[in-house]
Image 1: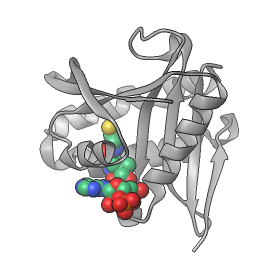
Image 2 (image 1 turned 135 degrees about the vertical axis):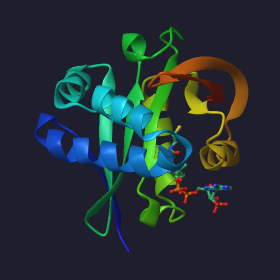
Image 3 (image 1 turned 90 degrees about the horizontal axis):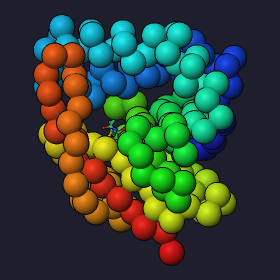
Image 4 (image 1 turned 30 degrees about the horizontal axis):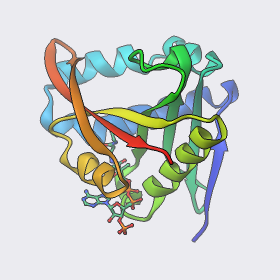
Length: 172
Ligand SMILES: CC(C)(COP(=O)(O)OP(=O)(O)OC[C@H]1O[C@@H](n2cnc3c(N)ncnc32)[C@H](O)[C@@H]1OP(=O)(O)O)[C@@H](O)C(=O)NCCC(=O)NCCS
């Protein structure tokens, strides 16, 4: 079994789009209407939007490979790319998605370690994220790796207002 990581570039746009769609769909389709899913997927992961995010110097995307297959991806933001104003000492873990069939193999932890490495190299004091209050698996994972619940904000899934918990991990 081998695990590898690669930083995405603009050349990876199509593969990135595929994994964004696939992982978001399998994670949330059972708890959301098909209309809201469709609206969200098209808005968040159209090529123009992803190209813009990939070109932002304050955002980084990575693929994680399990035995040479793309198994998941990570997106981290600093400075103005953060989806909330948390300042220049914070790093946002915006997306961490592992395909269903590769979950519970240590890949999420591997991407979290990468996030911590980037945060520490850039002298950040904390890592924060927003997670849907009903995403129990992700919340359990985040607690396991040391995040604590610090607040909440609204998030729109299509026309439905949902609550995201804000979770934070302070770096020593
Ligand atoms: C949440 C997610 C990233 C976790 O990644 P993963 O590769 O499955 O997790 P790992 O195998 O690296 O687990 C790391 C640790 O967390 C624990 N863990 C993982 N998922 C857990 C869960 N649902 N409940 C309890 N513990 C969990 C593991 O047991 C492991 O603990 P250990 O080190 O003591 O063995 C992954 O399940 C995922 O992509 N889910 C769907 C997408 C999603 O919801 N992303 C977050 C959006 S905010």
